[in-house]
Length: 411
Image 1 (cartoon, rainbow, N blue to C red):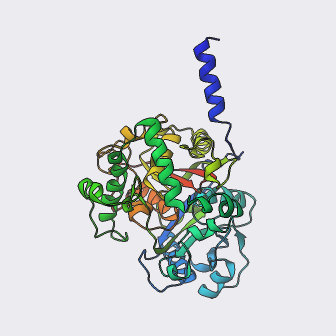
Image 2 (image 1 turned 135 degrees about the vertical axis):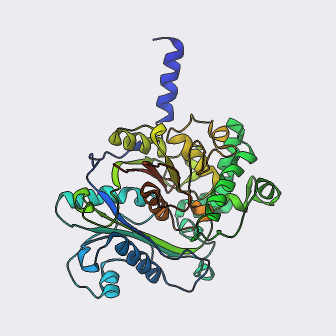
Image 3 (image 1 turned 180 degrees about the vertical axis):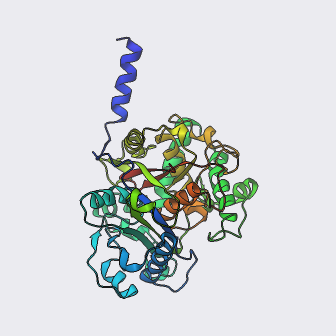
């Protein structure tokens, strides 16, 4: 083995020493998303989380052409208050039939792995039609929360003792530090981060349901916006909003008998970081666990990144978008800046149409579940910012300590 080759192998081993991929059964072609629905995505609305989720589920069932009594499985997120569980479903729809229920759904990484859990339930005959839903009323609840979503992080003892006292808190500070490091290591520029923000805003301007539908953003306006924590402008940061979404899963065979064109799951992957949410301990400071999740999903699907027509990623900050694009294999590590420049992420002619509904930066902060809805709509050919001829779409889920990759295709 040459000295160069040995050094390269050692570098690869070191790069992958900070996490691992979850072992998953092959579920390619075993589950389809047969219906999608979004609640109204708004600023503070006075609605409860349960009311928002109920609206999304109603619309997903109508989209699929199912009656409430035909849904016998429900998935929700493993935390949070007032999420739409089996009891809330029955109360809202006036039903009482037995339902399979799982707390391995909802948004974030679980918006990407819920189809895997559903495939297992469908395989074992535990349910026939399963709905996954997630909603937030964080804009309405803002007055009750200390530091917004950062309140959840502030409860962690590690952060309370080793991060907060040094002023390294909350999330904008974490990720601004990561962005600065990426700039230092790879030469990433402010304009390149701005390209992500501007592309997402343009897509939101074309999407009637987006919170920022009526707020255009040019590169000049982005650069003129004051920094809130270097190098971030407010446009580099996600919204705080009320909203939610839902999608219905079943077998491809049953889906063919329902209302919508078939969109099936081609691959699922889950990656994990050993350091959890403790950002200061992350060995691969400018990487995400997509390094581990994406290869599993693409391998299961028998596809490669160049096969992807549209990508949506959990985007709390522009730098997280850029890192996931690198880590999922759309470009080499450190080349994300040049890759996203200009119109590269645009739905109409970009090399990688990205967050074509606007993402969490400009559509709504509903923690990724609306990203999956957008991919389904793209593959059906009914999105507001439609990518011509889209057949393969990917969602990248993210929480920090974990990442998921969900690959959908139109057969």
